[in-house]
Each structure stands twice: as C-alpha cells, then as structure tokens.
Length: 458
Ligand code: UDX
Ligand code: UDX
Image (cartoon, rainbow, N blue to C red; front, side):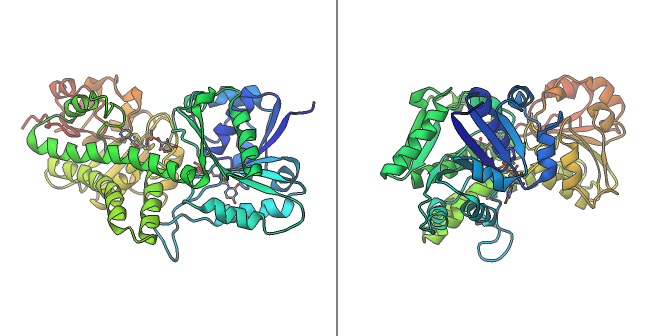
C-alpha cells in the first residue's frame, strides 16, 4: 500500500508516543513511524504492555499498530525513509556546567539534528515537538542547513500542550494547535503541510500559526501561567490555614469571576511533572541571560512557592504529630505527580518521602500505577520504605496517612476499617483535599487538609 505522507517521530516518550498514535489513528492514509534509542521502550510499544500508562492510549495504539503505526529502533532508516520528522527527545534541565539547574540540556536535541543531517538523502520538514528554549530552532536550522548539497530542511515549531492523564482527550480535541514557521516561501509551504495533517481531525479555526520564536515562547509561557495559578492558590492556602478561611471556598468564589475562571485553582502539595519546573527555570534562565533580572525573579518565585508548599506540608505533619516522626510509620497514598498517570517525574511525593525518612520515619507507599517508578526514584532507601499496592493494607499499622495523589479510588474506601487498623491517635493529611474530612473526623481521625482548619480530637 502506498501512503500519502510518511511521518517519523524521534523520541517515543510521554509526548512522542501518544501524539504519533493519535496521528496514525486519525489518518490511516499516512504511515507513522516512531523511533527511539531505548530498545526496551520500543519493545514495550510493540507489546501488550505499553511503556506508559495513559487512559485510552491502549485502544488507539491497538487500532493503528501494524496498520500505519510502527515502532522501531532503526533511527537511520527512519530518517532516510520519511519526509516529515517530529523531534520529541527529552530536554531536561542541565545538571552540569554553565546554566546547571536552570538551562535546558540540549545535547540530545543537537545529537538528533546531526543524525538527521547525516542520514538524510532528500529534503525534509523537521518539527520541534520538544519544549525548547526560545531561538533553538535557529540553532537547529544552522546545523541542518550547513551543507550545500541540494537537500533542504525546513524547521517548524509545533509545541505539544497535552497534559498527562488526559493526553488522548487533549490530542483528540485540542484547545489549539500552534505551528510556528519562518515567513519564507518554503517555510510557508512546510507550515501548510503540517496544517493539512492536523486538519484531518482538528477544526481549522483551532490551528493557529505564528512566527517560530513566538511559538517556542508560547509553550514556556503557557506552562509558566498554569504553574503560577497553582502557586498563587497554594500561597493563599497557607494564609487560609492561619486565618481559618477555607481555600476551597475561596477558590470557588474567585474562580467564578469569568475573567479568572475555575481551573487550576486546586490547592495541593505543589505541582510536579516533567514540564512546569523545567520550563519556568528555563524561562528564568533566558530572562537573566537578557539582563531582565526583575522578570526572572518574578517567575522564579513560582518555583520557590512550590518548594515552600512541599516543605510546609512536611512541617504540618511534624507539628501535628508532636514534633517527632522518628520511628513512626507514615503511609503515602499516591506517588504519581497527578492522578491517571504512572509518571513520577518531579512528583512532590519524592521530596516528601525523602523528607519523612530524614525525620527517621518509616514510609509505606501505595499507588495503583506508579510503584514501579517509585522504586526507581527511591532506590537506595529500601531499608526504610515498603511498597503495598492496596491502600487499605498499606495503612495497616501506620500512624498517619498522607494523600499525595488525587486518585479517585481513595475517596470511597472503608475508613472505619482503615481507622481500626492504625496506631492511635491516627492522622490523615489530605494533600489534595479529596476526602470527606468531616466523615473521617467523626470516625476518629485527626484530619489536616490543605488550606482549611484542621479537625482534631485534642
Ligand atoms: C520530552 C520533554 O521532557 C518535553 O519537554 C518535550 O516537550 C517532549 O519530550 P517526554 O516525551 O515526556 O517529554 O520525555 P520522555 O518520556 O523522556 O521521552 C523522550 C524519549 O526520547 C525517550 O524515550 C528517549 O529514549 C528518547 N531519546 C532521547 C532518543 O530517542 N534519542 C535521544 O538522543 C535522546
Ligand atoms: C502540563 C500542562 O498542563 C500541559 O499543557 C503541558 O503540555 C505539559 O505540562 P502535566 O504536567 O502533564 O501538563 O499535568 P497538569 O495537569 O498540568 O498538572 C501539573 C501538576 O500541577 C500536577 O502535579 C498537578 O497535580 C498539579 N495541579 C494541577 C495542582 O496542584 N492544582 C491544580 O489545580 C492543577
């Protein structure tokens, strides 16, 4: 069968995998190949157990795999045989040298650009899917177009706005698709090619275009704004706890202002995930680079507030439990950075678990999907951590439960039974405000929500 377009994606992670699965699912007339240097990951994409958990992903992968969706480790062949190449390799925060802890580590991206240059035998459209510092496309363009052998590369920026846990819905019905391009004749042509792909299922008015730098920056700014809302409400949650106000009531009242809107105003133990912190630090780094120190400080405070909220949660536990956690057993419900994913990257649970162990507590971790990743994150702490998938069993014999991920299953457990099995006085620290606090209190728990007065029996 001959396909209308041949599409490649380099990087089969949380972004590349689901995004390509959606394109292949929606467009049987295109052939979509996903390649990755990680052979184990590719084997998993080709098996019944996909390497990432994402609701609805299994169904679309199964529908398209082998038909027009293929997973492979053969990067060289992939580059040679495809004309449209998405780049979705990871761009973590640099851990070394200049800009360590702030700037993006672009080594994988540059290596990928060089591979594309080396193996290409014809002109290509190269699409930045990874979130990148502003003006990275320029560097990519320079590397790719450094040889004058008649092969041309057009670079587009097409940031991905999907959120984990709702990736399939976000891909199927995106708020918008953003395509940044150069305003040259071939830039416009490349842009049209990509618009045509999305137009297979996305309404035309939702596909917007911009210059390439605006597109790169928009992704950083969208994440910075979302994270800023969370830090804002978390800052207010600290205030509510002092003022005996209720942060849920405040956020409802504030969010009903149509200029503000209700979403992303849930107070929590802080935001996690691979993007928010990395992207803000990247923005901060770029601002400092351009001498915009006040702007950099402003955005950096969003991350500082997030760190504060996590530490504050541990301090609340410590204060409530008579200023010592040494020798006590704390059960953590949830380790993923949010519900409906197995992803634990930058999860506040990692920080909280380590801090509790620093206070010499024993920790029991429960999560319906993320225990495999939790074990990797907490490697080296095996003597102080146990992993128990069932939340009721996990709480048995513990002094406290801390809810770190808002999994639905925690809402309707048998709290009478849980209470009976715990050491008294028993505590619940609801870091996501998902339980019926009054009910838990009536059963006998001392309940500490976020941003609300605690309900205690003493
Ligand atoms: C990543 C970035 O974190 C995000 O900023 C960006 O928007 C998209 O890419 P994600 O898909 O969640 O997001 O990352 P990850 O799950 O780590 O996937 C990246 C994949 O690229 C990995 O499977 C890795 O093996 C692969 N990779 C990395 C390559 O194939 N080649 C490389 O040179 C480097
Ligand atoms: C985010 C962006 O939403 C997405 O557009 C971008 O492409 C990638 O980064 P993601 O990190 O997958 O997506 O999840 P998101 O739903 O944004 O949640 C991020 C963190 O914020 C989670 O830890 C979540 O629990 C937390 N959060 C979210 C809150 O604490 N309160 C809220 O009200 C919303």
